[in-house]
Image (cartoon, rainbow, N blue to C red; front, side, top):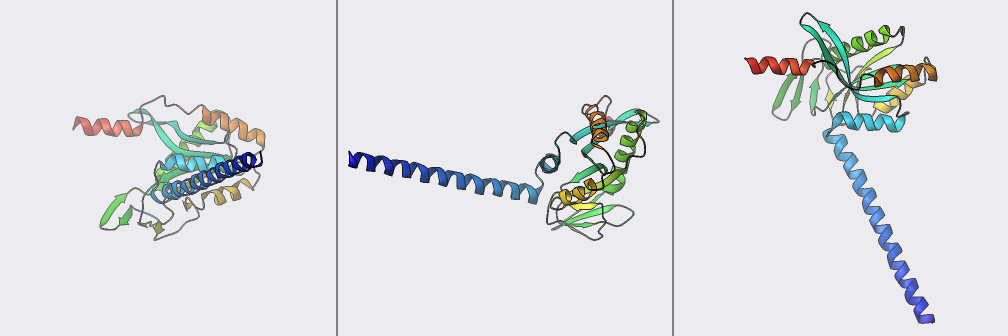
Length: 222
């Protein structure tokens, strides 16, 4: 009887040790995956969205919203990467996955320098200003005015370097801290947040052709 009990305890010990090893490996793999996403910006908009939903109420964080913009050629939807409705106002976030050194002058085009690669792109802050304006117009149509709307640009690669730094230019390792400071300002009530969040939900699906589709159609016709 004693030998049988001893054998049972040995077996239970082996099982417990195996479970501990499996759990430890899962923890290591989880940290490794998170680090890889941080460094290379894979699925960058979703990663920033996940970071913010973990830090804030997931009913106040949204991704891939579509807002109409009137032009001479008609109404087109502009796509907003991430929106976070904090108590200090609305954070409108343009997410970038560029790596290396970013030449970020106050005006003009920006450049990415990564190894031998040099790529020019539009100033993302100016690009995101169009999104801020579209959201402000959507709120105005519902009678909501004087709500602070903040323009942020977030690069997912934590090793990205900038030639010029601005309060609105962030990396993924300091975006939560920045928005927590905005949330501390307590300008909006919880009721205000719920009302604005509902308006954001109404823009989860696009109603018009997007600017990207319009430009793609133009290139196809050439």
